[in-house]
Length: 75
Image (tube, rainbow, N blue to C red; front, top):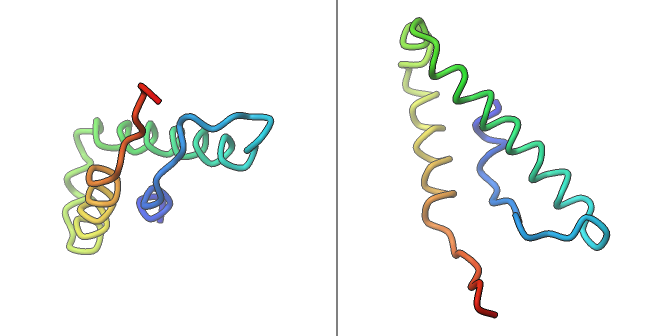
């Protein structure tokens, strides 16, 4: 399920030469998130999104991404 792919936090400051796998993951996660937003924009999405499994995965994805440590830009 694509929601579970988004559980892991991406390193948005990764260097493409030093951490190419992190850059690839970050770009893939960004694509998946955009795709999820497109699905949510569909008016008929309510018909297939309002079930317990999808809602639980959605909450877990939000928890793992919103309650994370942000890097300090001043360093």
